[in-house]
Length: 122
Length: 108
Image (cartoon, rainbow over all chains, first blue to last red; front, side, top):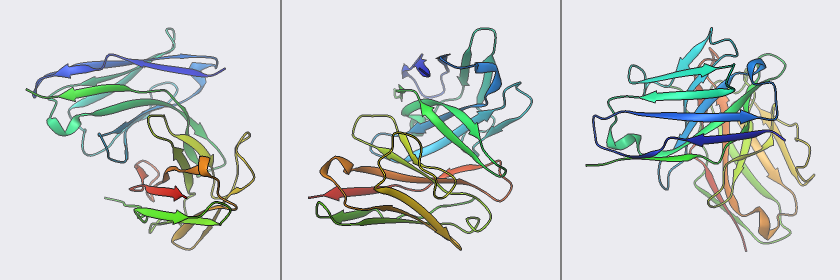
């Protein structure tokens, strides 16, 4: 069974930093791209960042570019999100999701982890 | 930046057909996908590549796409289908991944 388990969320002050982790199991992690998607309280889903299987391709949403860094360790079956210069508007549940590439041009997220809550507040 | 537009809410009675739309300029060239999110849970994929249904998703869920609009159809909606539904696609370059604002489906 594919499992994605996020950790590292918590309360942080504006301007602070936090590192999220996602532990993957049940599939060949090194063969899949991975993603972070977030959801502010009571709001919709927002894609944050994607990283290819070998880390060769990395993409960010404009809202986090320059502040967040996505990375992965295929030996540890783990995905990370380093979040710096955090703002109140970064408050959200952060989901880790496996990327699935179908027939070009096709890419989607499946499955998702249960998420970890990040709260940015003084 | 690229946007996908959904109606905020749709309401149907049990057994009726619910249709949720998603509009976006790149949809003629890019696939649409649909996620179901029940309260307090992670999103679940219900339709991929416009109209394909993952294993385990009931047959009452179907998808279609024409021009700049994609549609999720739930034929014979059930109370357990009450959830938020999000469409997802990419911009024309394929590098920006975008969700629609979400549609709250009420079945009562």
